[in-house]
Length: 464
Image 1 (spheres, rainbow, N blue to C red):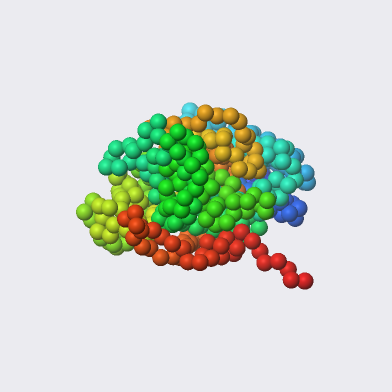
Image 2: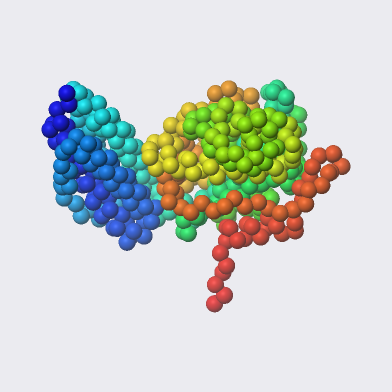
């Protein structure tokens, strides 16, 4: 028999804690917004909304137990105006709530109230994420000062997503003694995060785009450049780090942003062995897509055009990676499917991150992300350069991801841009043809890449 009165008392204490957090964090939101610290202001607003949702869940439980919800605050709002003190006090509130919920979850379990016990534990995990988020903000604000609080490192943050495929007929292609078999990048997506306008631009590249890439000779030495398919840039290099560096260089060259003096460059990258797509799909609980046509029927009869299906097992790989075994064996058809998958994945990740601020950390750890400390293109989020021998290009068994930014700082960035508008994926226009090498070439229209760069990275100068 549940001792309802005690459970209701503890749940109302939790309501009071959550109401205190809601009011305090909204006060911080207003203050920070007035100070021009938009991103930190937005963080406190989002956290307050999450705490409000906790109030709702607690109230529903109280009403279920036939109690009355007492909408009172545990303590009044503190009028703190300095950012470090705000973050310190926010952590103090979260720490107190975590301690309370730990104790109350045990107490309700002892009362035989499994529902309230689980509710306290569920909310406790979210509060731990809040406390960790405030810790990261404190560390970065101390290290980088007011400039960091106003915006990360500039008004733009750029991230290149690389999906590379180094298998042929199920067999790994590269050998450690070779320097041009690091796998081709079949998926390339550039994210340009505009902090001023709070928008995220997305540009997907055709793998066959013709552009200068860096070559590496069989002795590991620089062998100059050559105009080849963009996807081949990833193939060259002695380590996975070099494969990614070469891809960054080629994309910057294509867009005309290879010079760093104006801040227009690629800050970070995240690369994934595309064989990990099924692992990723499994970890997020399956991505739901509407199959665009019957191209994949020969691989899986359930992937019928027009059907909406949650991808499981090998279906994610079929949908995003397969090209030659389909009814329409073109890269354009595969890119279209990749965009469908990406849009659904982005929506799913947003839901999961809003529900749990620790979700990004958990996901990246489970994907075995390697932190590349050798490719440091921008120090805005505090990672450092140090000497490293590099990672063998065959090391993919458990490490599907590599990035030149730490997991903590990727999680920080993801939570900061949660309320930004995600714009539709764009592509560059051009012409496909069969080259003399008997491979498909994609030649961009004149100034196509330049025009995209100008409208995305730059603003028109005032003529006065």
